[in-house]
Length: 404
Image (cartoon, rainbow, N blue to C red; front, top):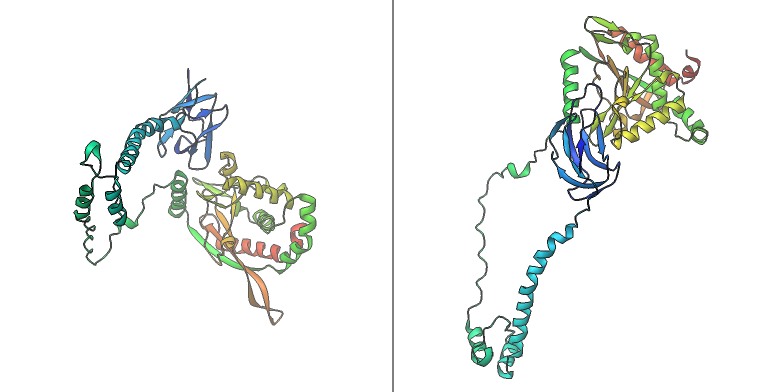
């Protein structure tokens, strides 16, 4: 009896997937719940597991093919025995054996039937007699046979290939065409959608990171000892963004037709770079989480994103996004919003720069921050004020604790 391998439900609004990779080959033994194949949607990569034990009998859909929910990917033969792949090569090896034995026997026979005189001539001239046809009695190789072999012309050297004409090299052999993954296609669609539908603008500011660095250095060891996770900068920016979102609700809103939907909850997306592309998992209800809770959730989401273990529920429903190009060394950029959200905060690398403080030129660790926003819903004054609100909170971290 064969069990069907079926494309499972992929989540709300997701009807199609791409077969990314088969994890088993036809003939492999399968255990219950063992991963068989990876499917890639425009949001996540998920595994299809075996519902029964047996042997992978047939693969109906090859890697790279698109499939819909409910489609049959292949079959598992229950109670079968995995094929021993090595046996497939056995007949060929057995067929080779008689030929090898014959060649060895021939070489041994010529050497045995070689009399002392022709043997000395052959040895003196480094002549291989294994291929000589003896003309003597019982196939013996005679002195005449050896002398005739020595008179034969040496093999002509291989002809050199004609020189290739000089000129431009062909580009075809230096190009590689690879089909875009479904995730990359979806990223392209959404980013282009943002450009086509939103009135995008970006405003910039700079933040003195001195106080937040000092605060982190003072408490990072005790924080990690108590909570079991490192204290990073992202939790400070999440908290600062939530304060600013409360002060400027339009930044946390979205446009739905002719309506503006104001959201009185704060699900903060944190952009994560993965081998497959950029994904934005969401920290739910970040306003009611402490620094430790935010750091733990960001760490868990980031790890699962890089391992391709995120679920659809991890990626949907964010109200505002933060992206940190600084981890890759970016000094300044204009991030693009994640529709239907109306704004995105961009963090960048912290660099020591000369700044004026109280009339004195001093070196301070500075970070440029950027807010890209949809001008259809957010006015310039709101966008600039929002960014200043974040700047104030980061430069004076006590504000985050006192909510001022």
